[in-house]
Image (cartoon, rainbow, N blue to C red; front, side, top):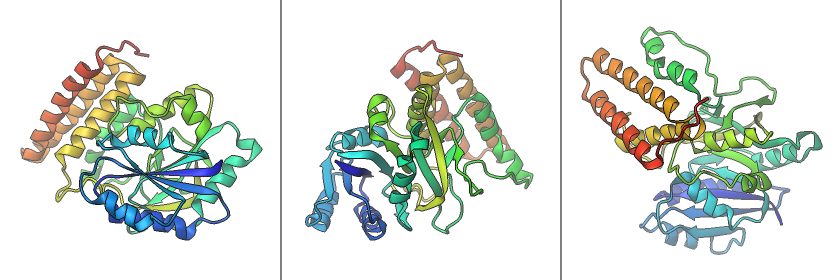
Length: 314
C-alpha cells in the first residue's frame, strides 16, 4: 500500500499538468506516493505528451477516461486505481512550494485527528496573494450575502475574506476546495466519492455535507501553502465565460436540490436571478448580464428536469 495517491485531472492542458507533477516530484520526500493522472477525454495530444514525459517514472499512472467526465466523476475513476491510504485531489493548475503532501499526511496520522476526514491548505494565486481555499457549506443565507457582494464593491467597502485562514491555527471549515483536498481513502469509499450527477462546481461541497453527516470533521492547515492558477483549464478573454457560468449554475442548483430540496433550490434561483437583474440595470443594460440571466433560468429548468422533484427541504 502507498501512503498517498495523488489524483490529477487533465483536460487539454498537458504542459500545465507536467509543471504540477514536476513540482510534486521536486518537493515531496520521505513519503511513499503515486501520481494518477486522469485524462478527461482531451482528444488532442495530451496523452501522448504525458506518456512520453513520464514513461520512465513508475510512480506516475496515466488513466484515459475517453470522455470528459467532469471533475468529480474523473476523480472517482482515478480513485479506483489508487493504492494509497489517503487520496490527495490536486488541481493540475497548482504548484507545490514545499513538502505539502508530507505535512498533510503527518497531520492526519496523529491519533487525536482520527475523526478528521479531510484537510487542505491555504491557496495562493499566481501573485502569491490569498485565494479561495475553503468556506462554509453553502446555504440560502450564504447565497444572499454572496450574490449582492457587488454592491459593497461599488461602494468601495472592503470586508475581510472568509475563505482563507490568516491565523496560525488549524480551523474547522465547511468544505475544502477541490484544488487541494486531502482525504482518507476509507472515508471517500464509505460515502461513495463524488455524486455522479455533478459535472463541475459544488461537488466538493455536497460530498463534504455527506461526510459531516457521518460525524467527521474537515479542517484547514494554514501552514501548508500551495499556488493555484485558478480557472486555467476554462480559458476566457473576458471575466464572463458562458460555459463556465453555466457549469457553475448547474453545480449550485444540483447541490441545493440534493442537500435542501426543490423549494430551497428555487429560492436560490430567485436570489441569483434578482441579483443579476440588478446588475443588468446598474450596468446600464450590459448585454453580459442579460445573457447571464438567460443562463440562470434555463439551467434551473434543465437541472430540475434532470433531477426531478426532491422533497428534502429543511
